[in-house]
Image 1 (cartoon, rainbow, N blue to C red):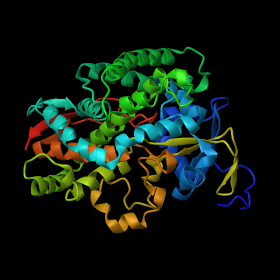
Image 2: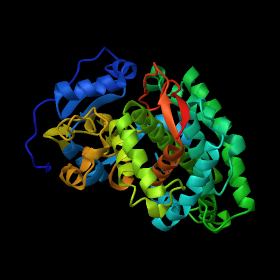
Image 3: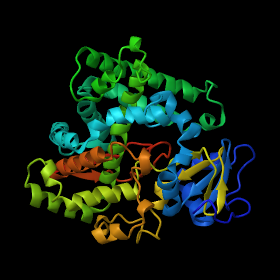
Image 4: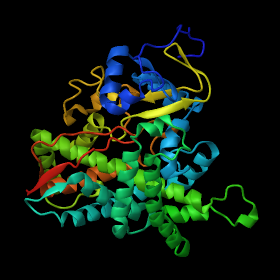
Length: 451
């Protein structure tokens, strides 16, 4: 993979597309089928086009590692990614670059230090246990909505020291409207300045979020604490009269808070929802999970110290994120020329790397479409190529909250399944979107049964 390797003439093989639209329409119509079929038919590097320009789809861990880790300085998240997220998250750490990203990540990082994450564990289980008190045997519930609510409350308390009970509906509806709007073809074809109906819906979603977030910022400005993220960001904003170039505007603080508020609960809620679905479809896995919970916990709430003994619980979470990765794909744009598998990749193109594809590749996983947590042995993980599993991305832009998310997912899963068995309502299909996250298009109704 050196710059001196021989170049391959032409472009990699790939699907033909329509005039002007390229393959964008095919991707939006059946995203999971399209990305999977492209990998199966055209190999480890596939080439296709859409209105934004050339696309290189990488389907091999070695090439993904090259982009995300080994030569990450040649790539940025880029306009394609930012044009989708920026209308709602602004210039937060999820889509900022360079010095702004480094400074703000440095300010936020202490909230995710292992010692701080340990402090969050008890709060996570308490919030979950309180939510479960509203569940009744025989009820049919939308578990995705339930998980979105509890993880939102957890992230708001953990990172911002705030209670957002009264804002749950506003945040949830804004996020739903935003995610739906990003599926519009016009969003990808027309310039960002064109006020399409989808962009108007995003604007309304932002207005609802801003009401919540600016209120949180003003509350912390009036009553700062030692450890919450908003107070840290405010402390990183010295008096403007000092002329300090590192000062942060209130709008920039807003962008970071929105990013953490949304990213900090969306993916964990999805992971849990999809885990519930997988367990309902695989009762033998649920039985083994519950046996471990009974042996280790004996009816009490899980703690941080229990996690080392809840090995099968961890494997269930890992396997769920393999089979149903909450983020189904990552994109990067080269700012310098690179060579991948002998093909020259130049600025102006886009590189796509899909967890959904790589995590289901039979080269790395036996019986890849089966939900088999027991596959996650130490030996299996040692033999697995580095980037054959990357639910949190990799390299410098690896998810800042990966430890937080894994802790939260295991504790919530253990808390729920000690008390309840969740039965999938017959006829419920898993129909996932593939925009920024793998969000269910429809509710996931499950009937609650006490243990």
